[in-house]
Each structure stands twice: as C-alpha cells, then as structure tokens.
Image (cartoon, rainbow, N blue to C red; front, side, top):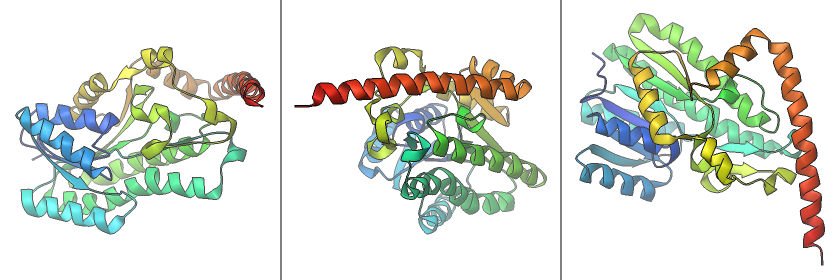
Length: 289
C-alpha cells in the first residue's frame, strides 16, 4: 500500500533546488527515502549528503527530464533497487518570460520540452508500473499560471495549463488501478526561478530588465513552508493544491467570473507593459554614450 510518508520511496525531479529541494528535505524529514533527480548533478549530490548527515535517506541521480529513455531507466532502476515507487514528484520546470512577439520557436520548444514533455516522460515511465504494483501517487508541479492566463508568461502558462489537464485526465484513469494523481498550483514561491536565467529559464526582450525586488520576495511564500503544507495536502489526496491559501480566492474569482477576470488581467497588463517599456527606454538612454 501507499506510504505517507515513512519508508516511502519518492522520486523528485528538479530536486536540487527551489520547490524540489524543499520537497526533498521535508520528505526525508518525514521518513521517506528520496531520489533527487536533477541535471545539476553536483548540486543534487551535495544536497543528498546534507540530508543524510541530518539523519535522512537520500541519493542523487543525474536526469534531464527531456530525455525519455533516461527517465525510463531511472524509474526502472529505482523499482529494481527499492522494490516499489510510492511517489513521483514531476517537479522539474523552467520559466520563459517576455512578450509573445519576443518568443522564438526555439523558446517555445525549450519550455514545452521541459515543462510539458518532462512531465509526460515521467508519467509514461512511472504510471504503468504503479498500476502493476497497485498503488502510487504522481504529483505534477503546475502553477497558478496553469489556472488562468498570465500575459508576459504565455509560453509558461500554456505548458502549465497542459500539466493541469494531464493531471485531471490521468487522475480519472488511475482511480481503478489505485494510482493517485495530483497537481501543485503554487502562486509566488521564493525560489531561484524568480531570478529567471541560468538553469531556470530565460527572460526575453524588454522584460529582461526585470529583476526580483526585495519587496517581491517578501511577499513570496517560503519554499519550506510550501513543501510542508503541500505534502499535507498530497497525503489527503487533494486533486489541485493551491498555495499560498490566499491564491484560492483569486482562483475562485476567475472561475466564477472568467470574462471579468480576463478584462482585469488585460487592464493590469497594459499598465504594467507601459511602465516596463518606459523603464527600458530610460535605462537605454542613461546607458547611451
């Protein structure tokens, strides 16, 4: 039977940083055995050693979720070593921010390959095996951007909407096999993805001048607190897990009044875009020789 969470075997993608790191630490604290799968192998290895030094059980595994064969092999090896797989946290993801016209097709392929196909690869590898063993829980990290449109994050929002759709569809299918499927839909969480760039994504066009300000980070939910509350909700087999709780109000409003919500979003977008372009023009002028 599925274990929550003591002695459970948990595979966490993107487990070396951000939400994935927080989930890995909290799972280990609750007595689970954690596989930290990440393309940042050295960082994952360091985190695994920290968890073990604190008395937890963890190991690192190199994984680029875009590689379906590698994902398949990792799930197969995990089952071979541990004899079971209780949880797959399909958490790895990146952000691409910027106006739609600044996105190239390569930008679209990049984010779809990671945020959507990475989740598909994980489910494709784990779901049949969970059906065979008669239990398991797949948890996909989506976003509040997967519940409503977010101008300036069209590609990110599109992939996260797809993850929510996949989650709800697979949840219905998995019911008869004893396999649970859920989705995290976090609001703003204080993680490295807020900084854009690097291993966490890219920011395009004039939007590239955006930086996370201290006041923005102050309003963001702490990743450790998110992991604690999110895992409590997973244990209760919640389908869509929205955190921080204040975002549930916005979610409910958008579902009840979608037309009004779209109008308000467009209004805020126009205001924000005007300020952003004015700031970009000022910085360009100040930087001119």
